Length: 78
Image (cartoon, rainbow, N blue to C red; front, top):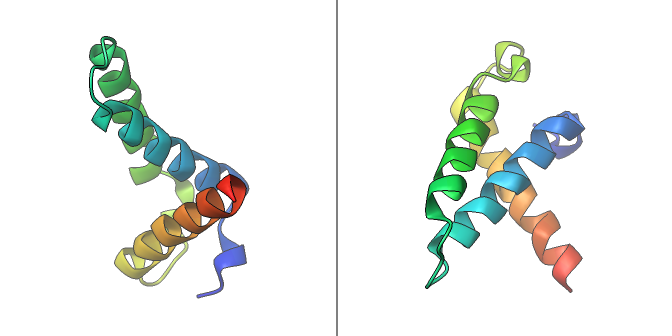
């Protein structure tokens, strides 16, 4: 599967999921309830995105999406 075939909104949602998860994992956070709610909303958006109805191998595509989002995050940080 070509990584560029993912819709931009799906990649952005996955990146937001990673950022929210990292913020939730950070020590001494006082707003964990808001972060957990955001994480849940992002999870639902990721899980039910219409893109998954068009791909033949959903588990492999989900893993590729996660890797793509992490790669873009690392590239932005550098």
